[in-house]
Length: 121
Image (cartoon, rainbow, N blue to C red; front, top):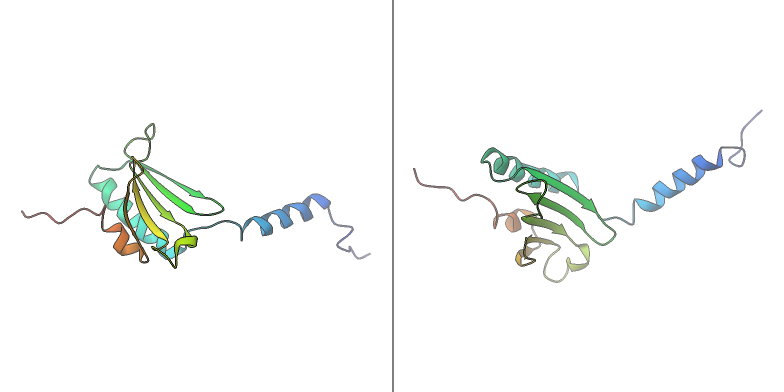
């Protein structure tokens, strides 16, 4: 006896359809972007500046938030908004007060605004 798609468990069909439908509707960071952000995060954690982060994948943008402590508001938000790709650039760094510190087309250049500056010894 062969099982046809109609005979399969309907909850499995709905779950598969839901996950397939949800994936294209969300903006995410790709592996290279996430690697660059997490490299900066690791350096700042090693310096004792940052302690926690969160990642939000929304319908219109992806947000990487950085916290000094977990109970506070984020001190920086790194956002990817593809709607702005042809305008000011899809990447931006936003401070805790909502001020856009830098916006651009290349993530590495945008992250330079919060990257630690080399110090003379």
